[in-house]
Length: 186
Image 1 (cartoon, rainbow, N blue to C red):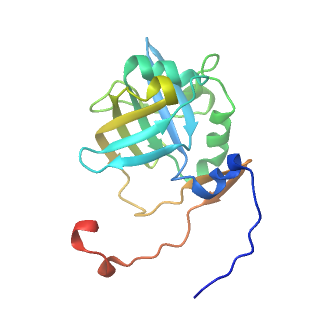
Image 2: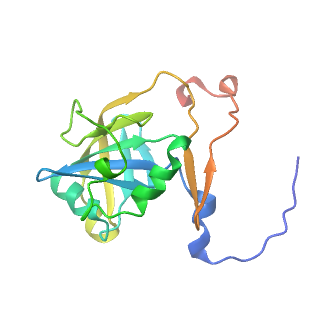
């Protein structure tokens, strides 16, 4: 079906509400005996094997230096029922607050990194900093996933996606068309 949309100009800094790449994640870190968690929406898969994930973390964020110095973190995927925690963590600085304690989250030991996993999250990806070349100019981290775990059920959890300006979207109906793909593209 062809559509003819009536379009209006919008400021370039508003395009994020159309392009946010994936679910909101909680990034946990550990440096010099202190832990932190940050809420993040700016990430993208960069490669399948090795599994590389790119993340933009502003240098103004407390987690930036912790992750830059330790060279590792855990990308945790929360579900929609954690929305208050997701927002609360994003509105709280780890420089002054133990976010695990404040938000009642459980630290779990990882298999590949020292940064803690968040037990209450659906999935946990243990990451090491693989490339620092874009840090100084763009605050862009390139991580390699060293170990990963996810709940076995549900297969597709309800995740939260940020649209900007305080608006979120919850993942919904799934469409499946594997028969239309070339096997190497699945």
